[in-house]
Figure 1 (tube, protein in one colour):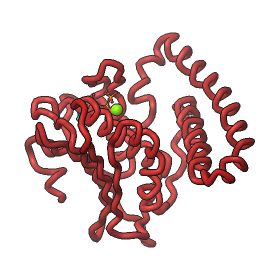
Figure 2: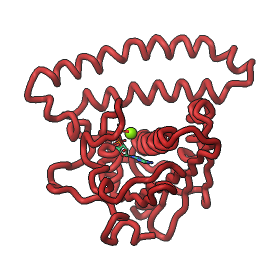
Figure 3: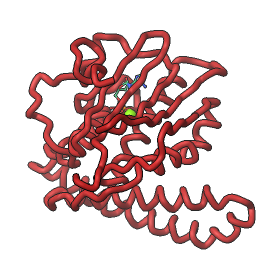
Figure 4: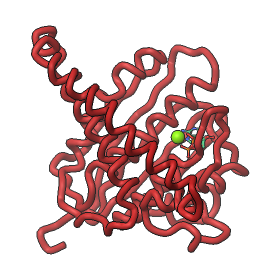
Length: 258
Ligand SMILES: Nc1ncnc2c1ncn2[C@@H]1O[C@H](COP(=O)(O)OP(=O)(O)O)[C@@H](O)[C@H]1O
Ligand SMILES: [Mg+2]
């Protein structure tokens, strides 16, 4: 497993031409260039204003929550509220680029992994793609920002769904999320049976603004890499064109001594 990250060739985390160009995870990593001009101010203004409709939507969902519970949709109601809180938190992080990161806290990684299929229930169904999950061990604790790790998984799964969909109509699309551990690290893999990625493209995947999608931003994987590295972990990819792609991330386990 370790080799997946450290061997040469296409399976290791792509190397940058200038690795020092991208440092720790903050939105500064991808938006920092805006800070020299008014675009950053505009982006910050937009981010700030986005919080208002989010608050309105959250208020209405809270109002509707009892009805949703009566309909047997309590889990969906909780996810809606959690996702709105997550979006608000992302905006706050963007607006807080100058502040040092809040201190990292231990959290149960398996809880996040187990919740992910429910987040994508609607989207996967609409796209006709099955999303499955296996947690090989429970009680896996890591230290960090659980919201950010969730953001990484959401980005990886969204990419997998996009890739399967882009490969054309089919009825066997599958994304599988798997969590396991060894003595020192927890691993999460996101495997899809999409079109795969050509070896020439692998090195560009984690570069800011690299995208093959018409409406893509190309910053999702850059953010994922920065978040994982900021947590002391690694992220890598293996892909076979025509068969599919697996992104795997590792995070150091939190122990009482750590
Ligand atoms: N699971 C996947 N299968 C195939 N290609 C992928 C997969 N995940 C990412 N990619 C490729 O990596 C590119 C960059 O992804 P990302 O940084 O998330 O930006 P975006 O999703 O906006 O394009 C995608 O445009 C796509 O070409
Ligand atoms: Mg993406």
